[in-house]
Amino acid sequence: MSHNHWSCLLATVFVTEETFLHGFTTRSGGISIIPTLSGLNLFCSPKRKDSKAVVEENFRRLGKAAGFDPQTYISIKVDHADIVKILGKTEPERYDGIVTNQKGMTIAAPGADCIPILFCDPVKRACGAVHSGWKGTLLGVSMATVNAMVSEYQSDVKDILVVLGPSVGPCCFTLTQEEAKAFHDIDPQCVRQIESSRPNVDIRRATRVLLERGGILPQNIQDDTIEDRSQNVTLCTSCHPDKFYSHIRDGENFGIQICFIAIRE
Image (cartoon, rainbow, N blue to C red; front, side, top):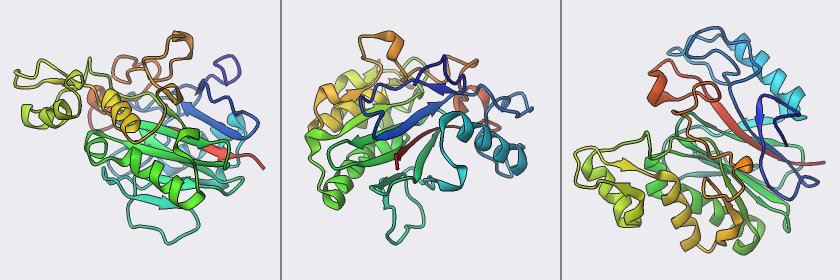
């Protein structure tokens, strides 16, 4: 995928285009008119004033641009935890990860500072989508998704590819010192100025560390450490108001972008 094809989508570097349809959205190309939502907002609620009709039109535009039928779209139900839904089995009440090996079903996860993450196994032809906020990161939602792919579809962890999408960077994200300590315990490099009252925290690095400890190969994880910066989709949502929505930057009436993935028919 490339910016030249669809202005509403970011590129990814899965080398499996023939197997998986996938992408991360930006805020470009939509019809939302509320200043903090303007663009391709993909969520409505009583707190956020885009109408259902506006969001449906944005999904229609996205589906047309990306090449999927919005009627096949299934998103996670955010709980900031580590529950994973297996598509086709009993649905949990809330879940932050979803996996499938069904062709033609578009699974997705939202993000507006939290990390939208895509997983794929080109060998077993299975995939997953995850919403990972700081709480979900600590609870291990990413590895819970990997483990679901291993147990449900017999994926080999060494075959699984992972891409971390647009999310708040350590430049703009702080927690209390007590909360930050949990990230420092994962890896001291996840926290800047641990002695301050509000240390800056890198939830992306924590995600990579936990995935690598779980057996995902370092070279199979794409994040903001990628050498080819033109392929970087792990941009800071808060730092790029022209490209992304951000709860931290925009306040309560914030918009939503998503990651999505489907196994081609």
